[in-house]
Length: 128
Image 1 (cartoon, rainbow, N blue to C red):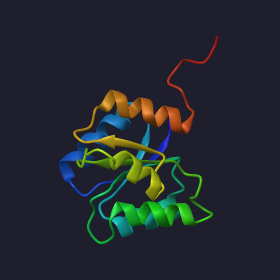
Image 2 (image 1 turned 180 degrees about the horizontal axis):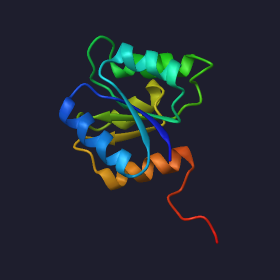
Image 3 (image 1 turned 135 degrees about the vertical axis):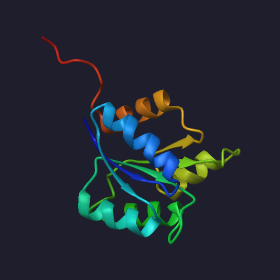
């Protein structure tokens, strides 16, 4: 189980993702704009952040940069979520401070793999 901060302004997306992640045993908090996401990242100490890049108040590119500048959140993995699946977008997200990139629409199975790879809690059962 991971503590996940989901920063997403579209209710349908955050509702879908938060419910599915919670069913998988993750603890999910939601922020609906960039400033709220930055504030929650600093106060909630999530293990990973799922960050929409097109947000109101403060865009995801700015949020990612500020999170990586802060000693408190510099090592928190960030997965960029964006509908802008154009050539070079993954590289742009990595350059902004994100650790991985996931295009929308979300492929939930792939997103789970990315979360597990970055957080390091595999879904495998403990040895008996």
